[in-house]
Length: 209
Image 1 (cartoon, rainbow, N blue to C red):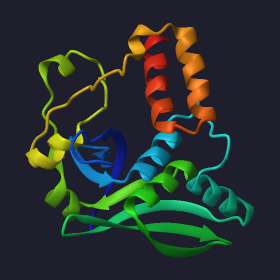
Image 2 (tube, rainbow, N blue to C red):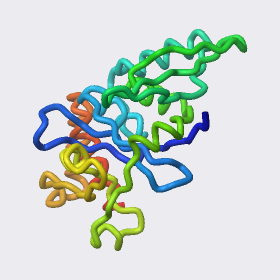
Image 3 (cartoon, helix red, strand yellow):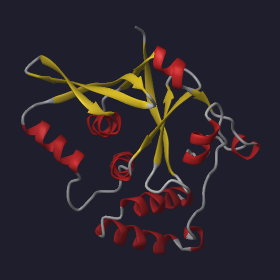
Image 4 (cartoon, rainbow, N blue to C red):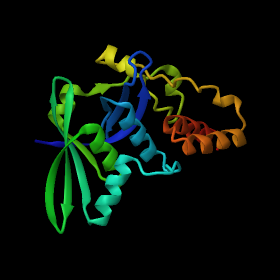
């Protein structure tokens, strides 16, 4: 079966389903997106890995796995989303140690969190993308942006199914803060291990620079 390489498009929080997030994967050579609903902890871990400048004061679970693997010369070569059953995605982590390859079963959210930390590629089968892939429908406002905000509302993904609108979401009042105040809030959020807030602050700081 043909494999299709994916990249992470964005993560967004559901306003109606408590604790639900959507991870959006985009095919590298195409326009289809693969939306995957994940939990808060996994969303936080993936967001931290994406935000290179945010360093947790203590290692998260996936960071600990990466440190453990590095110590014992285990490398994650790639992640494959290999099955979709009743709306649940199943993934495999392809690892290598001493030139011996092993395949480990994993939840897709955990597999992707680790793939980011190992800079490993993410793939799925064409049949899965044909079944679950969607084309996102951009608003005219988003089309005017060069790359736009990758924030995608989970509720619209779950409700629309076929097509979804892009929504940049609220800024939580951060646009009213000065750059110095934003950096101070970022330091406090990281110290308090509130990485969801830290990621939002980092986004606002990036827009100013």
